[in-house]
Image: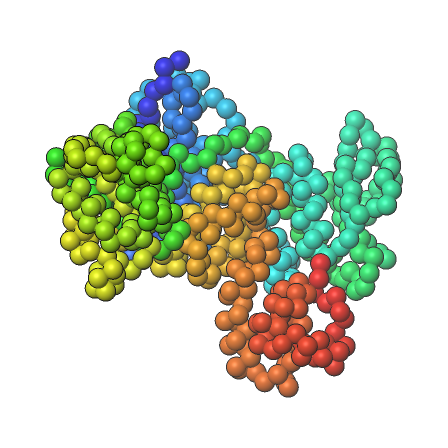
Length: 599
């Protein structure tokens, strides 16, 4: 079937009033939705704080010989995205789908008629959030008690329940109970566990972990069920029913024993799983995003203007930014949207060129021009003739080559080594540098005339100056590297926002890629590397220590930090601003167990 392009639009209403509309054309790969004015769809009437800065994104998914489809992706927003009363995380959009973000209703429309086969397939309702739990008047007292108990849960359990409430972990319970149980055993600090499920009239062990031998529990349905009288806590074990003939149990073989709070937490978990079971559908595999240019909407607009400028005029570009900010991504975006998109794109890293060969690499040489020149070389400029030449780390070029480059940019002529003839080239030059190029111009280490020759200069800010875009980048890399990991918890995103990212977007790419190697369904805050996880805690505990003396609360604070760091002595000492030996002495003084805080 011939591939058709979808021309779609989104209509935005607040109540019955139409606020705005946004066409989504074939060139729109990612449409961001949020409170900040830089979004493609801005939801910010009278400071609607229920809408996150970048709340969600609509992503175009292309498939060979099929029409484009669109996906709505919640970017870890505080209030979420609803469809038909359920919170969703990631879902393929159908015509007339109504999305609810705070007080806004976004309706997805389709401008062209498509064959129904382009829209057949299971949707991503697997990630639908559970409906809000409503209680009747007579239940109000019970509900109040549950909320009060939830506040007493440790941070990891609270985060676990929060994501259960959004229908995330529970979504994979039936299809992959092992992954679900791995998370559960971890957050209750157990070392063993199993799930018993119905299978062809018998209750069998569907998953087990931590046992020396294989369990062979098998009872006839309708027979004796350990949880027939409800959940219980007995001798280092917690057992809780999921349905009439399905239950799970976790075990802790070392003190402390489970308590009522642990049992209450497990009951809350099982309640959430039961409610989620009726909302879950099959998984639809989704490909990665179709563009590498996400975020920086003002720079994207500038790049599009440069790409569409008159090719006969000076259209050379200098991109300035720290290492890892995505300078080459911008360069490739310009190439992709320029009239030269079907011509050669040549990239040269000037920092790795030796002084002896840099002229030859850029401008070429004739055979026999110097010792070892056994064959003629065209050079990067002639290789890129008709297309685009990207010169990375241009600030590292020797001064004599800077002069030659300036001459070439002025007249678009190159002279290879060993030749008396100059040859014309038709090339657009894009260059990048991570140096403070203006300081180098003032210090005469970079030629002012060469700097001023670039008609366009794009300054790419570091990631620490655009932390509002961190969720957008995090989910972009998540979808790039994993089909198993589907969500980053809000606590984890908050830790990422607090971190300064000295390696910028490239560092985030490496972190997310490493996190997805474990194929966890959800990334919690405790899965993050320690230096990111504790970036926020250092400041929090610094304030705590300033307000309270160690003599008054020393033992309590040490225990709290040990729990947060999971018993990591190095990180604990760093947060408390004491050395490791002092920390060991304090633990002995207050009789804190050596393994305190570890899972």
